Amino acid sequence: MTTRRDFLKLSALAVAATTGMPGFLARAATQATGDRTLVVIQLTGGNDGLNTLVPYSNGAYYAARPTIAVPKKDVLTLTPDLGMHPSLRPLAGLWDKGQLAWIENVGYPDPNRSHFASMAIWHTADPAQAQADGWIGRVAEKLGDPFCASNVGGTTPLALRADTFSLPSIESVANFGVKLPAGLEDAFGAMLAAPRGGEADYLGRATRQMLKNTARVQKNAKKYREGATYPEGRFAAQLRDAARLIAAGVGQRILYVSHGNYDTHAGQRGEQDGLLGDLAAGLAAFHADLEAQGLAQKVVVMGFSEFGRRVAENASAGTDHGQGSVMFALGHGVKGGVHGDSPDLENLSLGDIRYKQDFRGVYAGALGGWLGLDARSVLGGEFKGPQWLA
Image 1: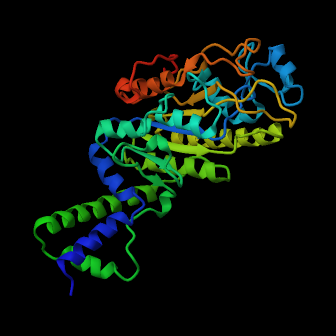
Image 2 (image 1 turned 180 degrees about the vertical axis):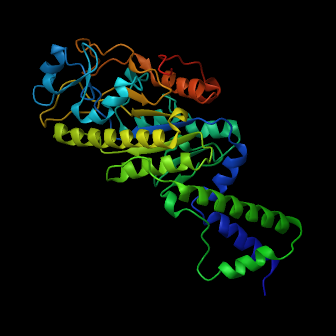
Image 3 (image 1 turned 90 degrees about the vertical axis):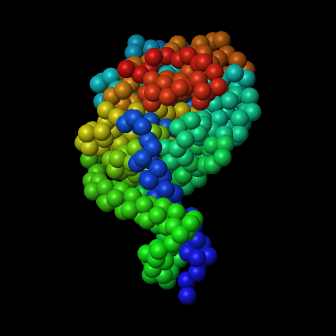
């Protein structure tokens, strides 16, 4: 015999046993406003900005890096002084179309070379490390929608932590859904169909609505067909899931994807060359897919790393933790080009470049200029940045 207590327990279990998607889908379908999406790419480990956007006309760059500098002949020339690492060639077409922006010399006050501390600063948008929540989590708080943003991956980063909840992580779009313990499906269906009163009635109606919305969006997600060929690998698969979520029309404002292993203390050229190639191939496929879906106008990608590397190479043909670095953005909504001043490689701070652009100014552009949100209330102050959005 099924009791009211059993019903409440099973309904709660059904909700809790999901990957987070059904609840998020239901909420997103009714609460999300705006039709633009920001995709944040985290390059974990401290990407070397100088070997990403290469100052190929600067002799100090080659003097500081006798074995790991990108040879001038290999650089993908962008300006008379700067060029991209050759592994970024898949993004060259976006540059030519004015849909790729580089933002130079980005950092924050009192730089911290700790991976953990520096990443926390970027996640919370708080160099004082006084904030316990993340900047995307605060967006969710402001919108009153805990499902307006998601991490595409396994572990929710601090950036998506709100004061009272954490935003969902989606390990795989293909596998999300309501998951009941084996053998309880029929009993749950019978309980859901039985007339109820009070809080049991409320929970029953909410659960039925959740199942209805889940089925609708699962159906839409199944309609998705890749509009481009993605390369092999986890990063590309996560970008494909991001494209599927956007194509399913779930209305999320921010999607978060991480790409790791940029901590290149030794053998940097081999390591970073491969990472940047993986990054560029995945992003190029993602953008091509969105173009094919007719959604590229609605999506901007913004990438960052927690810090750059030292200017001089070390004895292991690598680089150690530094300060400022470069950010990138791509999409129809960006103002293509190089924004900001290049680092002065002959006026360093403890061997690191001196940053000139506070990263919160770049965030402010994404929040206000792209998503139409109040950046000041999210970031806790007024921050200015380059006009990297079209």
